[in-house]
Length: 227
Image (tube, rainbow, N blue to C red; front, side, top):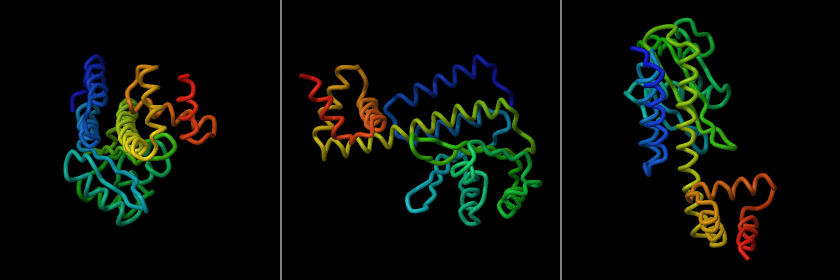
């Protein structure tokens, strides 16, 4: 894969940021992130995202081919692998050659047999919890350098932001239907600070967290401040 000039890399990152801000589904944004990884990072032949679900469930999304889904299935079966380790432990998990990888022997053996030799996984953070991992795979050994890790970290941040916005939108819908006070406070913040609905709810949530005060009480204070 030919390395992109830095100015082109900056343009592509800006395009991705605009896509994140547009009214699109989280699935579409995550697909853009994994596609961008294969285009922006030399050595990446396929990419996907593994999410931590409820009750110990794992969800595999946005694969650029069928291979990431197969690799995720192997990890769930054997309960070992770089993607799970990144999601639950280390921020960045790098494998230069699965043929020589001792950390996940069963997974690594099969990954190498099907032609995957390099792996690079990035933890996805969403505020107070871990959402999963962005996972990059290469067919050549020792495919990664520090530049690959830097670009991957930026792409992982885009993916995490999309997941965070999606989850906050769900919380916002629930708040507006069950707690009208929070909905009123959100509208006040949107008007006063010229932010959108997701940003307004995030401001309320942060105020609640920072002051250790219930969200509905913060909403009451915002409403009262209107006079």
